[in-house]
Amino acid sequence: MPMTQPTDASVDEFLAAVSDERRRTDSQAVCALMGEVTGEQPRMWGPSMVGFGHAPYTTADGKSHDWFAIGLAPRKAALTLYGLTFYGSNTDLLDHLGPHTTGKGCLYIKRLDAVDHDVLRALITRSWEAAHH
Image (cartoon, rainbow, N blue to C red; front, side):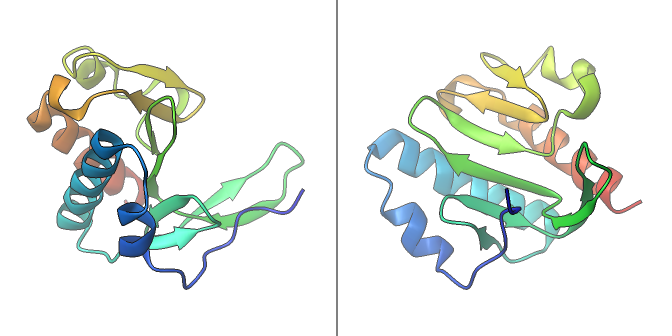
């Protein structure tokens, strides 16, 4: 399976086209926050992920691929944030974030207005700095 690649598609157009109003505004707000923290421009990765920066990603077969350092995807079930929770990291911040779930390297937020924005900013900042140490 080929890895998702960066594209030249418009991030603004992609986010504006998210059909669920709350998911659309939450996604736009998190994208703006990630841009503010990183100083980077967002870029589409594949048809449905927005990424910031670059970080090598090694797959189970030992191959290294280019990937984004942090990113987001407005999914139907939740706003998915990438690069903030690798290997059980950042539990000190996650404990204070508010309602969320985590997966392998993913943080899922159903409602942005239900989480602590200062904690989210700290998570994004710490993760970005860790990817660019």
